[in-house]
Image (tube, rainbow, N blue to C red):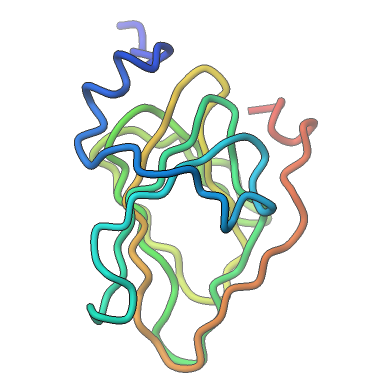
Length: 147
């Protein structure tokens, strides 16, 4: 059976039940392509921050690390379209709606859309002690093109 690719924005919008949100301008320098952020909980008022992050086709974030001395990390709940997740030194994982990716603290990784599909996931910031994010180098066009 041929895999379904979500190419058109109109088709994607029907499946993106948590909504596109606004351009992710605050973090744009850490992305190749355009992304959108729709907070689902209010940062600082809820103990767990959740946001729907949407990537246009080909968009991906830079390599990055969610540091923590205890706890921390991130959980991705894939909700619409198709994307990629990759940890440093490992093969990329193809992401589809319904998949959940648990990213331990202190693991270098990136995630984003496939080149021919819009993609959304809910990002869950896992509470921890002495947490911080470190943004690293972009995922090169060469690396991404091999997927």
